[in-house]
Amino acid sequence: MNFIGPLLGFLYSLLSDGFQFGPLRSQSIGKKVFGLQVINIEQRALANFKDSVIRNIPVGVATFFAIIPIWGWVLLFLVGIPLMAMEIYLITRVESGHRLGDVMADTQVIEIEDGL
Image 1 (cartoon, rainbow, N blue to C red):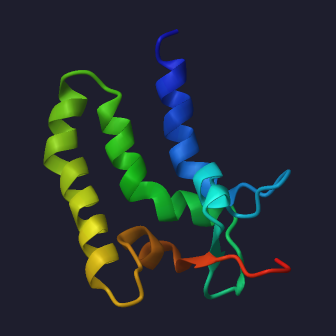
Image 2 (cartoon, helix red, strand yellow):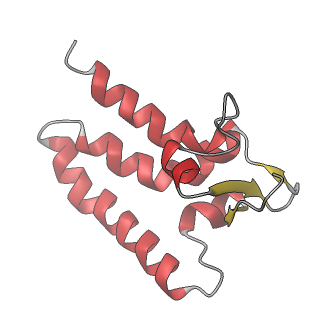
């Protein structure tokens, strides 16, 4: 039963940008706090769970490997950390601020304007 917490964290990391219930509109809790949300650029709509999973696969891979003792940690260093490094590089170097997950899912994080 020790795997339930990490598994829930992994699922949250994949699905959180697709939440559309209660006060959340294509937002993780952190995005809600900072007034951000994820949109699908191609459809010009709020991101859904599919968009969220595709967008968060690079982060999810690192999270998944981190919860598996020994071999997962090895894979985390070989695959997960380079993926996260690429994410950080793209966020800081690409003019639009898109990270690898945004390119894969055709999404963008935007500031919420009044009235949304």
